Image (cartoon, rainbow, N blue to C red; front, side, top):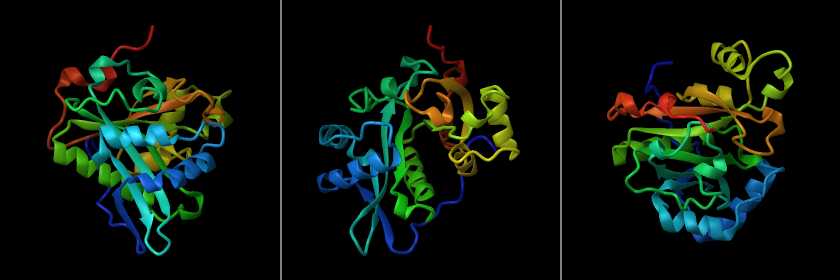
Length: 233
């Protein structure tokens, strides 16, 4: 997979459309969050309203047109990652889910959340939502998009291999991870494994992969390479 590569742009599947989040979506989004992340606290109305107030164009919804149901979401904010550590947690990077650290002058679009309602999965909605965020990166002339990928297959291999080896085997196709494999197929590159990205992610044994997609039209200067950011402590 080449640096800056991306899966071909994909239109929403028949019967779905991608649009901006609105207030009426909040209850359904909270229900999706509860279903997808059973060990995490769902988003609140206050958090979703803050996302919308601070960066409305970065909050995407996939809607099932016949029912009007929210089928999936992709939330993002802009950050200057020079102000962070490469292994900072989701809570740090999102101001505990409020996005109050959104920086309109930041060069990186940070993908804070991508989730699809269980009954709408397997329709390609995650890829469509990802492409919507990449269009935003291009439109704003940002350097890249970054995020954290869960590795929910890693707990099964914890006693055998280190996280970096696990990532390399997923990348080669030797191991299929339910989340990281999909991200790699969608054109993301892995920067580094980190521990403690999500506090209750037992399936990933507490590990995640920092991933990025480089805007081929506006790549970051070498000194802003994410792999060169300091680690905590």
